[in-house]
Each structure stands twice: as C-alpha cells, then as structure tokens.
Length: 400
Image 1 (tube, rainbow, N blue to C red):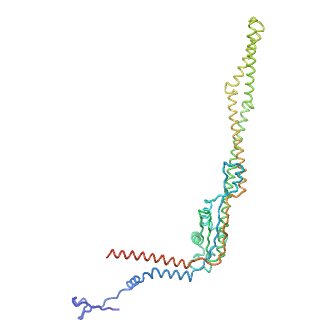
Image 2 (cartoon, rainbow, N blue to C red):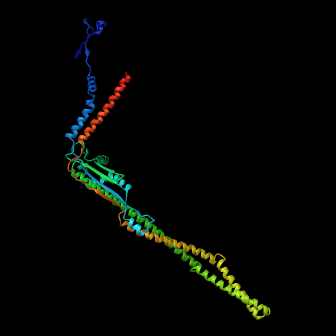
C-alpha cells in the first residue's frame, strides 16, 4: 500500500527528494504490523488486561472446570492431666480423671497429616493417584502425572487437603477435596485413622519410656541396697561385732558398775585405814581390790574410746553404714512405687484423639466457586489496571 502526501508550497526540496511539479512527495511505506498492534493494545488496554482474563477464567470455571466435592472432619487431641504433688491420694485419684489440651501433640498431628509419611501411608491403603486422576476431572485441576514422584504428589496433596489448627478452641479441622464425594470421605476417614494411629504410637512411646525409666531406677536402688548390705556384712565380719551400739551400751553400763564398786572399795579402804595398821590383811585386801577395780575400769574406758579399733570408731562406721542402708531401702521403696505407678499408667491411655465431627459425604460440589472466583479476579485486575494507569499518567505528566 502506498500513501501520497501533499507538501507545503513554501517547502523547497531538491529533485532528488522525489517531489513532482505539483508538490506531491514520492511513495512512503505504511506503518508496520508491530506498530499497529501497539496502537491497538493502547486503545484496548482495559479489555486485554481485565476483561479478557476474566472472560477466560469465567469460561473455564463455568463451562469446563470439573466439580470438586468437599469432606470435612474435626477432632481434638487431649492428654491426661498430671496430679499435683501437693495433693493426697484422694486428690490424685480425682485429678487423674481430668484431661488437658495437648497443643504440641495436636500441632504434631497436623504436621504429620501434611507430610510425606501420611501420603505414603495413604497410598498403601487406597489408590490415591487414581482418585486424583478420575476421568471426570478436567486436565487443569487433575493430577497431571500417572506415576508422580513423592515431591509432586505431596505438592498436589497439599492443594487438595487442608489441615488447620485453632489455637483458641484446640480443634483441628481437616478438609479434603476430590472429584467424587465418596473419594473425599474415604480420604478423610483414612487420614483420621492415620491420626489415631499416630496418637497410639505416641502413647506407646510414652508408656515405654516411663516403664524404662522406672525399671532403671529400680535396678539402681536394688544395686545400692545390695552394696550397703555387703558393706554391713564386711564390717561385722571385720570388727566381729553385730551391733557396736549395743556393745557400747553394755561397756558403758559395765564402766558404771565398776566405778560404783571402785568408789565403794575406796570408801571401805579409807574407813579401814583409820582403825587398822597399814600392813594388816584387811588393808592389803581392800587396797588390792581398789587397784583391780581401777585397772578394770581404765581398761574398759580405753576399749571404748582409744585407738582405731575402739567402740567410738566402730559406732561411727556402723552408723554411716546403717544410714546408707536405710537410704537405700527408702530409694528401693520409692522406685518400687514408681514402677507400680508406671505400670498402672501404662494400662491407661495418656493421649486421646476425640472426633468432634465425622467426615461427611457431600451432596453437591462446593468447588470450584466460580462466581466468587470470577468476581474476585475481575476486581483484582481492575484495581491493578487502575493503579497502573495512574502510574503511567503521572509519569507522562512529569515527562511533559
């Protein structure tokens, strides 16, 4: 296509410029396809950036997207409350029936339901990939791979399964989307069963740990008591004394009797010395008696308190061994009670998964929400277009 343009009469150009006598210029090439497309895009910018994407999304959602059915379930995770140490036996029995919110365990269950382990366990229970590739599913929303790897299947699984934990009420909400109502319900039921299995494994682990700790404590207490008993037996064999405290009591009593007899003999000797000669048999007998009693009393006192083999040292060692034996017996009694309590607790479940809402069987497809999705997309694109238009207009105004 050739366009001829009229030049001004005052314009003088050399003949090489292609002007004829009437002032018309030579042929000029028309604008290219790219320029025309840019002009068209500028004139139809709103239609191309807002209306066209909205129309495409609406056409897909209203006329092509496959319906998705939703199944919802809710559950609580509770743990058995521990009794206060200040409570007595009755208080312990009463508080043992209470339950507490197990927030950490509930969040752990939530993370488990969105993990590789949960997906792998589901694949052993049901044809999970086939459920996400039903014939009625549209190619956009369905699982694209017939044999997906673990990462791709997990990403798609997280799109179709949502697990939310409410920190205020402690309720965990499980929502499952699929292309058939019974598939959604079956997946939700199996996920709840997996959650209960995880809770049971946690219970078993807690019980095994409690029993293991109680048994180890009992073994330590038994070893301590055995060592104390052996030390006591070695002491008795070495010192040749069953109970040094009793021997000391007998020795003290003997010393008392000897000192009494010694005092009486001294009194009799003093009285006899007033009336008899110093070499009389009576004086000699009394003097010998006093010396004998004095020597015996001194010997008894030395046996009680002098040397490493004295009764004082024996009593100290014996009391130390006796105290160690009593402490070992108390520890053994406490460990035995702890083991019995751990066995009783092992027979009771410590964590519970309480189903608040069972997985429902959907009667109609709630997804995709075509009307709301198209409306939100239109509003978002319109707002974005308006902001971009204001930005471009401001830049042109400043450039001018």
